[in-house]
Length: 216
Image (tube, rainbow, N blue to C red):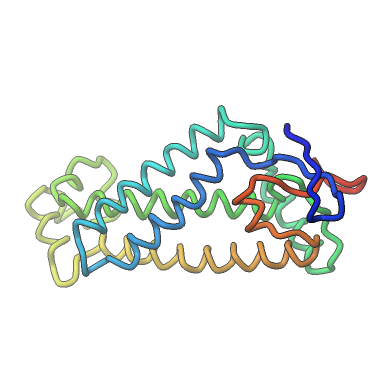
């Protein structure tokens, strides 16, 4: 782990927390999702390409969560629902501890974002070619069994503005906006509470070195 001293921060020591691959992933995902969302219903080809980029980035993050640097690995920051709720409770009281990596609430948000992105990308892939729906063994749980055959599914998905799968796709995409808003709000709150710019840290990779009460 890199340790540096930054002249602009009164000599405060900093640590390299976010590796380059995590930073590239983060900002690439921001751009790809924004492009995908803004081009929906307008530029189909651009929307589809952006969707594939999002899917590829999610796949990369899953792999990097297993083999990446210390603070990128899931085993380092995934703590379970109870600790996430306890951390949120501490935030409400203003007593939460500073984490050098992801805090428990941030970890829960990462899981939620990855699940929502995966669902959005998958349903988008199904909509790109409606015959793909018929290949899924569990689709009768989503689409009425009366439409489980390939032609029936295709007809259902093309009906009106898209059908059941398109509805799910749109709900997940809008859920992403909500999650992003909560995520940004949490970043701003943590930045203010702990006196550090977390957005800038995701650009530089560096955060203030851990103090005696911080969690590393």
